[in-house]
Amino acid sequence: MTDPVRITRLVAAGLLCGCLSACHTGPHPQLQQSMLQSRRLYLQNQNLAMQNQSLGHLAAENQRLAEQNQALKANLDLAQQRLDNLASSNSQLADKYKNLLTSSPNNPLSNDQIKRFEELRQKYPEFEFDPQTGVSKFSTDLLFHSGSDEITPRSQQILNEFAQIMNRPDAQHLKVLVVGHTDDKPIGKPHTRSHHPTNWHLSTNRADAVVLALRKHGIAETRMGAAGYSMYQPLSPNTSEDARQKNRRVEIYVLAPDASIAGWDDLTPLK
Image (cartoon, rainbow, N blue to C red; front, side, top):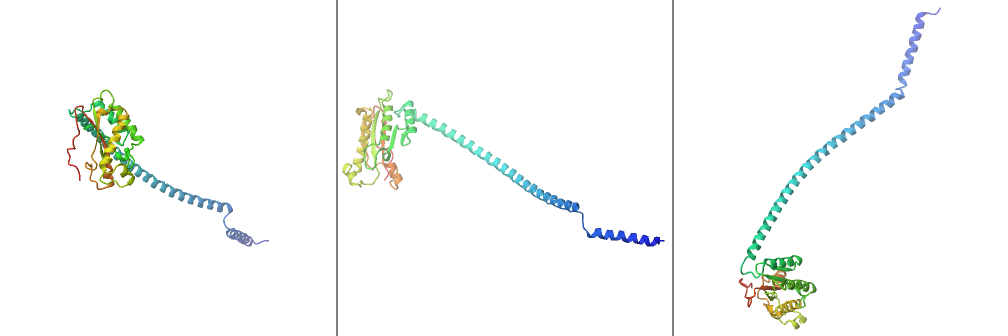
């Protein structure tokens, strides 16, 4: 008969060998896959956490910029309101000033006539008009080519519309005096000097040219006069080209019917 103790020892030895064999074969393939998936999920969660943190920073920065933009908009609205108020105040002052000027007994122009000349000034920026004195001014650089007394086509159009205003029934009693001015530079070009030997000639010849143009556009000769002051009534000292350009001008005075001659300016001539 077989010894029971011997059989028990043999069974125990077999089980021990099986356990040792299982320990050496490593984890099951499904366990390995599960561990890898867990690792991927962990890394994905870390990445999502970092993205969420970045989004939080971006949201905070966006909020800060929105608040800053709102503050800038409020400041801009306030500045625009101040500009609108200032423009309104300036407009009201200009209207009051114009009303004072037009109510002056020394002003030969009526409110309607001033309005028409203002509209002409707005249409042609090179045409200047002073409602207080009724004086219109043209830069000779725009009226004439350099060294010439021939009026440019665009200036002819302005003079034509000027004459239309002066020929309206309510303005036909007014007179016109055209005055030419030059800068202090002597006539240099031989061709110009052959037609206008001095600034006296150039200023009077240009004034004459404007009178003839106004006559062509319908203003009666009996209502007009012409004069030239050469370089002796500058608006600014002749110290720069910009100043000289301002001094080269033709002025058209609208005078009351009883005006016989234009006097010198009250201001002391600049030297």
